[in-house]
Length: 237
Image (cartoon, rainbow, N blue to C red; front, side, top):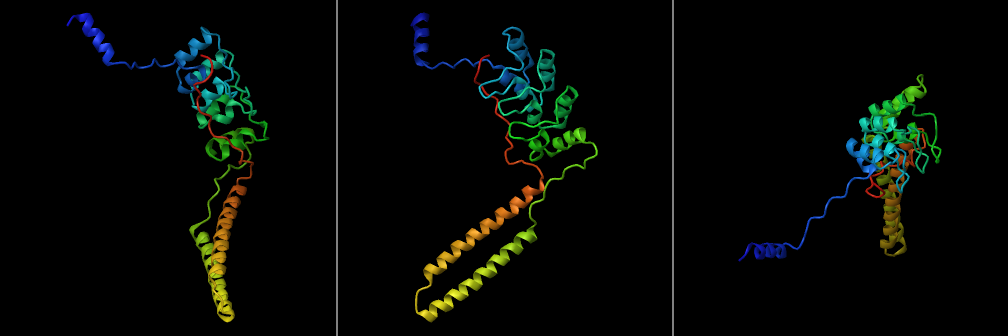
């Protein structure tokens, strides 16, 4: 077999080729801390540090979210705005997960005393998942305010007391149903089934009420807090 025939045979035996990886766009590169790629896209392809992707997320948000301080420093030097807003009115300070990044943004002019389009401040936004960061921001915005404390879930004793109360009420109701059914000469099965269903529902409602009480202790409107937006591969660059 000639070399050319052998090469042809090898190509025939391997019809599948590995696709070439797509180069990172600026948002992924910023989140990954890939400064070389970010620098190329800004300086060679004229992409703005404040350019929004299809979800209005900017390279500034991506770098802040993943704590890439070296990328943030470069983006700021090229016109990156520490107070640039996404479509929800969130600035990069809303995305941080550690005090070091929050301090960097504050030192570079990030505004803390503000609200997004839902009326939520950065402190309230971060308090649920990143209490240390929220406390740092609060210490900057209002140095005399005491630090926030993470709300405590219901204790084991409180949960057991609630469970015992429901069980006692259930047993009393079962006894009452059985006595009335016997006196009336009927089958109590359906009424007992309904009683159990109601008791289960009451238990769920009781658990929700305890959880809501914990939420109320947070003192801020945290229900609309968003999770970190994933780095998207969509968009130019």
